[in-house]
Length: 333
Image (tube, rainbow, N blue to C red; front, side):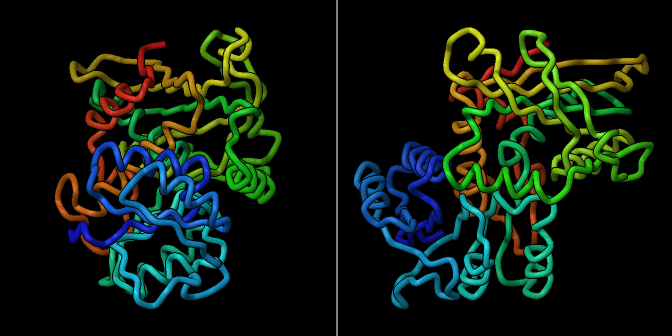
């Protein structure tokens, strides 16, 4: 990779984007970054703190994003919803890796079609999973204890004070208003369940049960196909987290329940919690930064053109180590 070219971070002055940029700067001090946003002053403020970074304004409704013709980039990272898919088109027109985190289950169709139409253009990383893929990777790390997995159930607690900035709140509203149905894998079949069947309770880290529901999220097919588990479900509760009930800042909590067979052939069940005292923001940024590393060839083998998901590019053990480095706790329940 030519490190003289800058990584274009769309939404780089927002919560996920600015934290991603800070991680990339820490890991790769000489990597040029371009902070792109609607407000140039805010973007410039982030760029000034980073060093070896500049700021630009972008217009998501324009095919050229409103960027100068003489600028070259090394990748396009969409930390906000690429609503007109012009960031994706710009990346493909220039042969650049593209990463997105906000498409959602119902929005990935254009990314899949774009990859098929220009299969040799550049890699596309679809990371519109919970925590941009870290929930899947933590689950796959826990799954190493099994010879065969029969069921996976994930329960996520998103504190209502930790839903992110304006872009994150808009994503959440868009995802939850598309459908009230849930998507699960049941007996090997991906199945849509009704709103009433989707309703459930999600256990938080202190045992408190919060009302939640099964959601249509990419984690379900990613985990089902990666583990061949015939039964997979992802439940989400939006409410007060354990730490806030203790008068502390909002935390993020994820419970991972697995059932199957051990390498010795005996029945095995495990439960783990993935938590972070500072909420979902640092974990989401970590996942994006790890994706950028891989897409640029800064870690691991060069990613070929085509469409990719986080579990296809990352080693779960490595990712759980990086999560611990930023303060996450991944431990048996």
